[in-house]
Image (cartoon, rainbow, N blue to C red; front, top):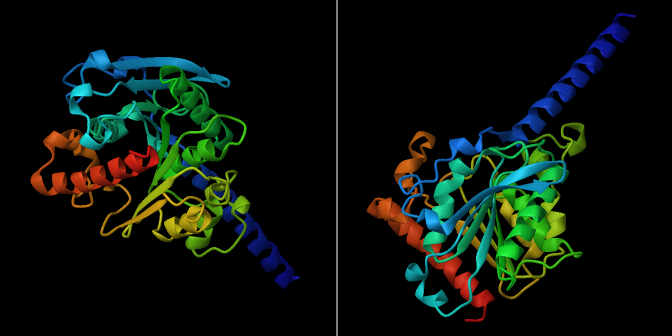
Length: 317
């Protein structure tokens, strides 16, 4: 009888741990910071040198809510030489699992500086976007943002770019066989799937025991035939570098233009500028390439060279 009580106590304890883990892990995936449109002061001082006349900020319908999109039109006077003769290219940027557009604004500034149009958007439940974040809603919001970009740029020259969790909707856009797809896909610090996240933690159990989400990016990447570029830091403390190897195994041979960059010494948050000792409180000091100290700027130029060369090859320039 005593052994039976101990056995059931252990079972209840394990069930409690799994239940609480599910709540905690799903909560970890979607950590959006709420904001209102009034919190975004899009003035010249806030935009890191981006002329407000080149920016559109609005809420658009997505599923049962609305998403906040910010569209930046490229500066024709600052085009990279390799892209100067090319038609405009728009980057649809899917950000990570936390905060909102403001937190990732410096990344938009980097891409704008390279000569791209940039569309940033917040998933439902993030920033000024309304509704609730979920895996399916993230995919739907990415598609909504992509369709918005297509209307702004009817020539179809659109690249899907995802950072961290944003790699999942970025890959989704590129593997969706029922719609016009982007011309290329770029991921940065992206996980291969939640099952791989659980496996890498040392718990070899089905991920659906802990999570309601799957984000099967590695499986989905097998269907991506457009050019694909992967960047990942060797010292990534959040999404281990091994995830990029799994993604590359899925997609590497699908297109001769595919590229895989192992960024030595970079962690999760200081890619693409690995020399930067990441400080969340001082993001505004490093928001525009012109503001970067020499060592950081050298890292940025390496990043810029990779992106621009990849896009030039994609466009056969």
